[in-house]
Image (cartoon, rainbow, N blue to C red; front, side):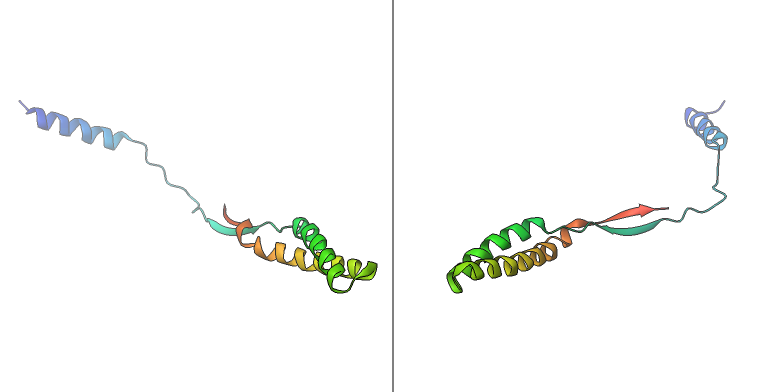
Length: 96
């Protein structure tokens, strides 16, 4: 007469043997791809333009100073906005 331990061991062995064993015929290749979104720089463009207009009015004065400051500030603000936020806009995606 088998002991309870032998009965349990035999039942577990029978379950393990009866499990279906499947193997993939083709290996799965997984690649991690870096995906980045670019900022349009609109926030920096507006903030830089407004700040540049105020600085241009104070430094050069008149309508020419306001326009020159606004254009220069807009370009600078857009560049700063795009460079500062670029690191936070990237993530990795798994592609097969």
